[in-house]
Length: 134
Image (cartoon, rainbow, N blue to C red; front, side, top):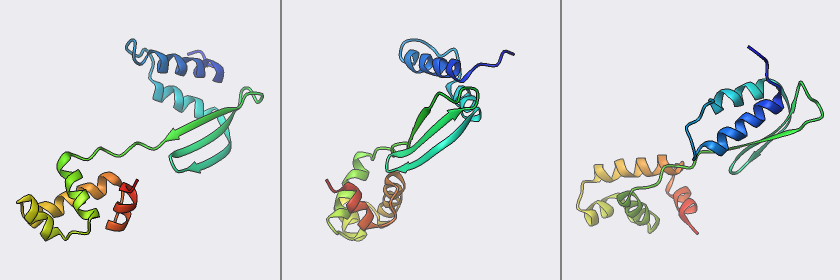
């Protein structure tokens, strides 16, 4: 198998990204990216709120600098029911009050609250309010 340079791998990754909407992929972008990262030396790694920024220098061409931006996956969207429950939580209502308003059991509301917290990656009502506040 012929070894590809970092520039060739980058070009193939760009083609994969460009053709994503137009045609089926002929290459596996994850494998290409893994190959590229193993042939590079990290120069800078920055943690940012939306993800991670990594500046790399390919081992086969030290004149080239690469910047990879790895975005955190966005949380799963809330269902209409979960959004309604989250709104009531932000109003300061108790689980029993929310259950009564929605006509379901408290255990159902507890389950929905767990799902809301998991999806929004929060662990308290305060964090939920901060997350949903404009």
